Length: 64
Image (tube, rainbow, N blue to C red):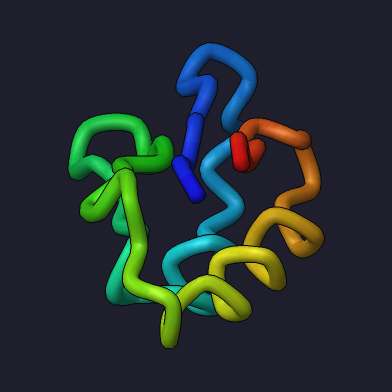
């Protein structure tokens, strides 16, 4: 699994950081998504999937 984040369409809702804090954070300037771990370990992949579903702007996608 590989995480892809489009910071241009991110609205800074923070659902990703709340849902999967091991993999996501927000920048301090605009609150936009920061990917902390582009290739999450298997035990964190379900949380990443949930973060993708929770993202209101669709800024996060997963590549298998």
